[in-house]
Length: 73
Image (cartoon, rainbow, N blue to C red; front, top):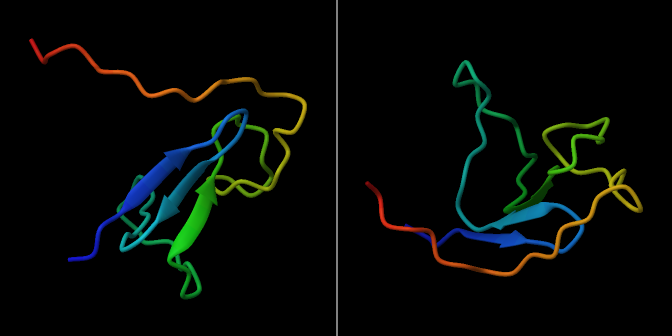
């Protein structure tokens, strides 16, 4: 199985790259048109949710810096 990479962009989207599928709440699969890299909306402003359309520009701030989660209870 190929590796999947998720990149959290500063002030923007999540980039998913690799071997993946995206499904809705009813487990229906989105047709990605053969893409192996997509950008998902984090700001909620996209007209093309769950995909990013760039609407976040100037309206969303988050500096993406990795950190460790605490251990599971």
